[in-house]
Amino acid sequence: MIDTLRLTAEGAKDLLERKEISGAELFAAYRAAIGERDEELHCFLHVCDDPGGDGLPIAVKDVIGTKGIPTTAGSKILEGYIPVYDSTVVARLKEHGLRILGKTNTDEFAMGSSTENSAFGPSHNPWDPSRVPGGSGGGSAAAVSAGMAPWALGSDTGGSIKQPSALCGNVGLRPTYGTVSRYGVVAFASSLDQVGPVARNVRDCAFLYSILAGRDPCDSTTVELPRPVELPTAEDVKGLRIGVPKELNEAEGIEPGVSAAVQAAIAKLEELGAEVAECSLPLSVEYGVACYYLIAPAEASSNLARYDGVRYGYRAAAEERLEMYERTRSEGFGDEPKRRIMVGTYALSAGYYDAYYGQAQKVRTVIKREHDALFETFDALVSPTSPTVAFPLGARTADPIAMYLCDLLTIPSCMAGLPGLNVPCGLSEGLPVGLQLVGPQFGENTLFRIGHALEQALGFDVVPERLR
Image (cartoon, rainbow, N blue to C red; front, side):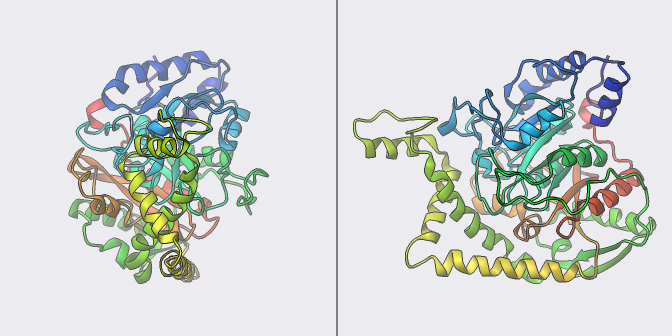
């Protein structure tokens, strides 16, 4: 019997190569796990039939285009939409023999921090189904945590891979902006969106990133990696310099249990030979969230203008064309996309562009420079990923600001276009705590090395206690 709760992607690959199991048996095992657990957790919006072959299964966040498979972005306005081509990242998965298990739930258009904004209902955290799995990629994170997929694709604009990975006890990477193609991915904020891997451990995460990364002629923002992706093997971090930004580690709202677990992990890094020192990111933390919530909604208002009921997706019944546009968008979008479209449209409007969007772009440059200055001294920065552990469903839905502050610690490095890796580092209140490692541009290999060493030293059991 295949234990999908314990099996890693690398372990599954070894079993397939040794012909101890077949691809069909492996796919069937994960389909059975979905059948057993997804009614309670609601991680998947669509489950695929076995396409055949002997490759590893993978779950894909439903903002990522998949030929012949529904892609809704968690929104009623795209309900029933089936792409006629694959996104570049999915094409690369298929080139390596991977097979799509299904499409995972997401906050609508990846706008949210809890997966409660999905038009098709929220996902639930495998550690405690009364709590959120994080967002926007809560479906991918929860599916991996619950053993319904060996790994998954997510997308990250301001923390949507790192934060749900923290709340569900996974390893998740937001790559350097431009290292992974966005072609065929439903756009939210084009200068911030980035696809990345969610996995059970650091080596699986690095392996999946190696499949995804690299220049794509269909996406002019992509670049070739300056060095190949390395799967980490060393279990020490001797000689590496790790900075502890005061503002990210002492921010208001960080729960004591989260802080204690992260500080214990930092102490473990010192034991392993890393040189740890306090540092500062004052402007990045003070202005990061405000800057993000001008730039991201402004770009969203432009990107979401295409959903008008004309070419694809939902179309409201109406006698006049303008009435059809208005009713389609009013009925098709949920509250959060509407909120961000209105904020973004205002920020881009005549007379306000320079004062809002233009000013936010200047602040973004300051945030990037502040990070770059630290990386002249440090190889990586460390902090909690989320200020809290998973919170109860419904606890923040009536307060958008409280929901936005879930990403207080992940947003600054996203604004700077830098890679960030979540590594589970302990429990608080019986729920996972995530540690965030941030590196310089193209610093993924260093993050993998640190994350792997910490993972081995801590021995965190990623299987939710209630499922063991």
